[in-house]
Length: 113
Image 1 (tube, rainbow, N blue to C red):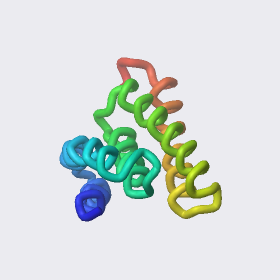
Image 2: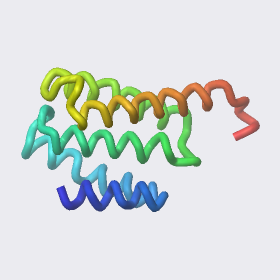
Image 3: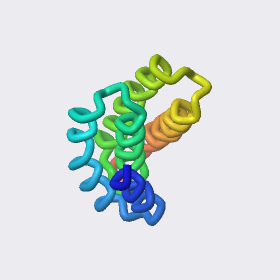
Image 4: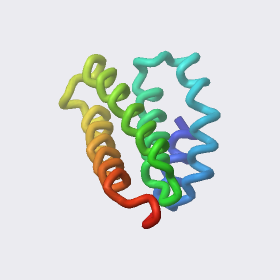
């Protein structure tokens, strides 16, 4: 949890490359130790997706990966925690933001990036 909190702080500081690198390391560990349905794993996956779509240098594929990750994470969170749980609500908010970022990238001509 400390590593995820640190990654969240890095995201807030806009040190997104550092956050992504850290989250890439801890995600497989969380999945193995806690499982796919644990709230810690769900939070880590949410933060990884946030770091992906908030990066100004993110490619359209990065943003699409963030959306796909959040769609799956939101589904799991709703099943395990329920739709009104604060973690689920945070994941769904991140999903709305990621979809907005994806729409913005898809409508921006390639030369304007």
